[in-house]
Image (cartoon, rainbow, N blue to C red):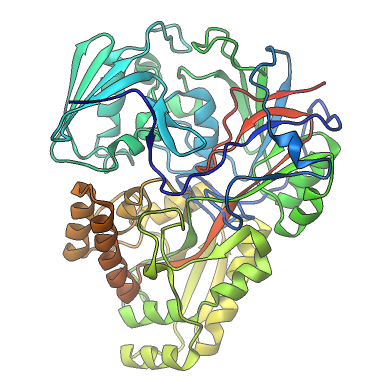
Length: 556
């Protein structure tokens, strides 16, 4: 039996702790932000202004400021609790604030303030205790026994215990939950006692602990879920540092301090207000004016200038996710492999990133970031080849194929769509662009109501979580309706395999097939790009792109 009470490293390339204590000039006290927006998501993401659920450019975690980089070496961990209100922009309105049904990255940003998880990630990519204080793994890697933190209450006053863990995990295993594939390896859940829960797996599952650091491991109040039913996603109840107060659709979500939080002295701020800005430039205007304290994205062209401004701090770091678009394989013209391959070979990834993102993204041809154990040859791509694309269309018996490309509503998503349109036109493609509100876009892709749809993924530490649900038959994010038994078997082998080199070889095989059949067109890997005012303290950068709010505070 292996007992784990210390962090388990899940990244091969470590990132550097970034804790901000920003003592330069003061910022505003918050207030109502203007409207606008950038686009993006979580779980799923739209190709927004350099954030979404990922990003890319420099290495290691760095903060830049016009005042001094040394100002980013200490955090606000020792500052007392105060009455600060932290105003944070989100690039889309979170569709579903319920971990069992959420598929958007912006959901995760808010849910991480409301709900603790069994385990979490630290800034080095280690899996660390949260609601589980320690865990034991059997020698055959089939049994996980979690010891739970005592004295923890949900926001509704009910107890967090082993029964609550069982309830939440079983809820995520239902056929209607997007968590079902993440938890499909679980055979049984046993409540040993109120503070101990034992999970038995059907077979060894390498990504299991990593999966519990995200929505599958989030704990919602069973009482609230049962009482509220479908309304729970509009009135979420967890154990986290902040409690849900109210929301104004497409405008704001307000959280207030959990006075009974189990971590003594936390949270530091009294309120977190998430303000919806689907336009990154508008969010930046509000950051500069002091109406916002923190933005979840920045316009790429504004990053260099803001890095030189002593009034602000900027994070511009490689993320874990990717952006691209699905091709619906059940509808013409993408029911023909040759047409899908033609689209893929016409994309000028280098030009797209240079024009739209500059130093805030990296061209990509796979779901794996450079820090992933699966990163390698599969990420390479050829330069556009119009004549070869025309030959493929001729082989398919298709001339001048026409289709609609659905995308988000932000200026950035529109710019990307226009570039894709321009890339395809020389080969005879007639591509129409339709802008769709992000939550609606997710629903339409899930229902198959599209021909091409631009939705990405924020990324996770383990490669399984970046690829399985996109390519596995019947998986929750397999919006292309792709099905290949060989790919299914390779993906499942990779889940069972613990040797990193062997896992990488399996993912290489999957990507060879995926590049041949092209159910999804990979475009780029965006950086996590954040901006904050210099009086914000207590921010720790973690490469999953989540803005953890428990330590956030403001120097008045």
